[in-house]
Each structure stands twice: as C-alpha cells, then as structure tokens.
Length: 38
Image (cartoon, rainbow, N blue to C red; front, side, top):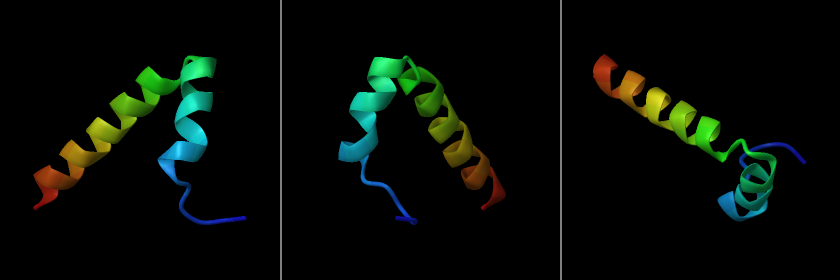
C-alpha cells in the first residue's frame, strides 16, 4: 500500500519506538518552512 498513512496507524508505533518527538519536530519544522514561503 502506498500513499498517505492515517495517524491511527503510526502514532502508537512512533510512541513505542521513541520517534514521536522527532516526528513532531519534523512536522512543525515543515509547517513553519511552508508558512515562511507564503
């Protein structure tokens, strides 16, 4: 399966693996980067 992944399918795994903080930082960085381009 390819394409978007629903949060319900990866958040628990990200929390258990300790990646949830890094993912959150990446999402915030991407959002701010896009905002600065507007």
